[in-house]
Image (tube, rainbow, N blue to C red):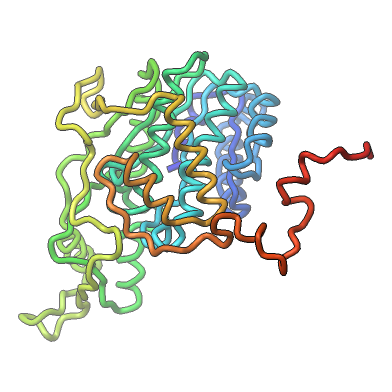
Length: 366
């Protein structure tokens, strides 16, 4: 979705468009594509295109970028979004999705960025997985920051799956068809909302322009799609036939693999039961509870400490008490230093730069 946002922002003729990505290859691809578009339209001198390698977790680097380029509007689309991978890597998922959003938002606030728009997901609503819970925490970060003094207008846009995005079901089915099948579907009754990438990006831009601060915008995704029907349809659109019990001589079969850890049969867009209309027929607005900034920062401090210690028991407790509807399925990893046990084991000599007493000792200037 980040690349498509860049494609649609370019015709709006910003003075400067800064692309930030942690993936060198992804950044190279979108920069090359956009540079070619600028050359084709004769706008290479009118719009400055800047590609920056960096991480949303590096607040100091982000601050330097925002100040140097005097950024006015920031679209935050960076996230780990593959549910099974994040479920098996919960700490990295939280660091990237939650604390990456926090660091980026703090940098934007410090630098006086005017508009900050978070790309969120329907998986943040009563999540059953770490990815969704980490994105709901990211929403809570922005909702809390929107209540604190400052000129930055924070908002978020929540929607479902986008057709053809990296790691999504359509490219997977296409590849499985190319290899001769079978197509893998987790459950016969699983349904998902879908939207095309261009439509989603256009609505994100329009929703962000409406924001006054703290809004959770919802995109109208239309009717949900049964993944089994999508699989059947893609087989037929490929000019092939479905192989099943009734048609054993068909070309491509479908195999049910079972719901993965943290996976829902259906997704929701609302935590509460009602959304308000906005000035756009395909954009709604949710009104949901949030944590005040002081309460939020205390929770985030505890969560970050738990991530540093790799203390999944504490992470589980924090998520369950903070994210409405979340029930943990984390496989517990004990802290490598429970209760600072390393301080009491005389066979372990702590390194001076991590020993807590080190910071309290006088040191010579170097």
